[in-house]
Image (cartoon, rainbow, N blue to C red; front, side):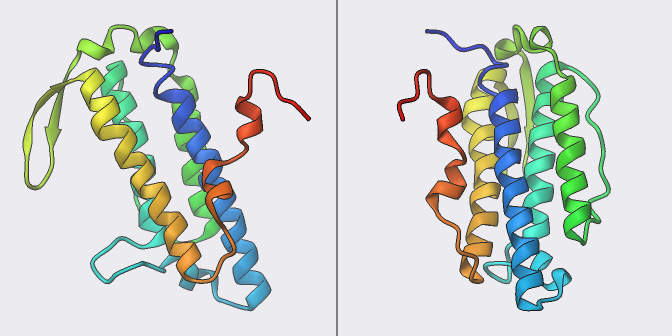
Length: 177
């Protein structure tokens, strides 16, 4: 079985954003039920030098739209990174998913050989699209979702691995009752 660049990216990213949407919903309910100011929850973080919960959502969005835009050779949408409420973060996820859904399979055909410029604070260089996808985009995207999970869990939300994996039954070829 072979996978296309599309198969290894767009549906996986969209599914990840579904999980992030569930986290946003759970965090909103948690804040309401406990009388916690939602702005407090949005600004929770694991450590002083780490991004806030909102920052994790923003970086997941930036990684997904940036990488897919580069791989597809299309203009990358720009968002302000000023979301400070659950509704604003949900909107951010929604517009990112809409962008991902606008990408057609054929736009990613051949992108495994596209040269991608990598520019981080500590390293810059070029790599092939397939290496970029599996070694940079996907691990980085899931790092931010896992960190959002950890922030919420660390602050008392009752979420676990099942929440992180999402509804696996939707992936089964032949589900058994």
